[in-house]
Image 1: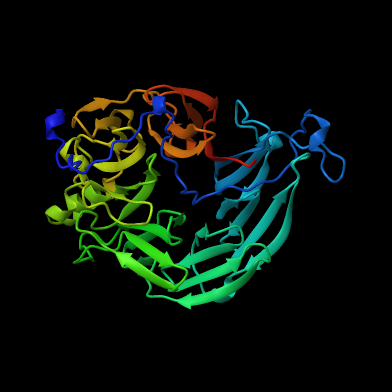
Image 2: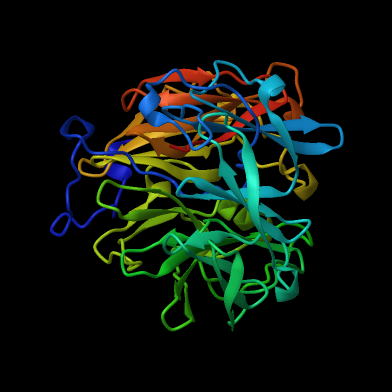
Length: 444
């Protein structure tokens, strides 16, 4: 679509230009790790110099990398973890540890804190840097707090972390060194996680702000009970928790009527809110008003304040039927992943019959200074698109997924890609049908 159709993206009088990558700026990095990282296993040891000796006489590996796999089985999705001095060329289950399902992990320093939703526990794991062995050094049970579903962890400092139960009306803080709960606070619940055909979810794992507060994002999805829409007013898309006062502020905006997700930040530490994927799905089948017809993004500064000089209506530049995730901000350009289908099925029960068709998946670059758009072809071989997951040592990593010809959705394959330039990516780890690289991290 012509660039002049992309309107209201920036207030040019107040716009701050970002440095390009050639000026040593970094892409945005995503802290959202809502599913699956855990460190286990023995892979290899280093041949580094002896000045890296461990207390038991071993030699520390120079680096340690973690890779998490998602494997689809007839009984459900199972997570595996692989750890070594580098990422493997292909998914390697022979040197991986089966984690099970409903597992989430947050890293802090050299440790991993593993959330077991089923058991309602958080385990602290420490890794031997010479053998890659992992051991549990502490376990915290949060069952007595009455929290349900997945509960994100955000670290305020090296010893203080927050458990956020927005749907249950509870915020808890714990000491990550002693693994003891130190504070429990009752808050106003956002809403039940699932009620009357509505699914609500936390879409960021807790983002630490420069002012010491923690920021979260939410989205609401109407699935079922077609076709009455339960919301008369915009739902909160963001919450700010202040540990010093114990208060929570919920924030709503007409531009994000049923929420979205913080998916990336820029080189200045500003965060960009991607719109709710389901806007057009809900609008088409539930007959909503014009508030639900446009896909917006907003920008939030490093202290959690909405930037009043910035507004970008993605749907004025591209046709979005599903998605609209902003995967990267580089200089003045944003990369948006979305689906543009031919025709919505007339029957609500058939609303997903287009999913997996590569003709409908798009990646578009939008220049926010010229309002021009251009295609992004680096992911063209991946029928289900790609999403940014993290930045390691200045390099940006994406998971790109495809559906092998003739396969059903359970056999999708996810590869790990590393960014070379804004338009060039290299394959790091190759997945396999039903096997996806899910998340990666550098441990040290």
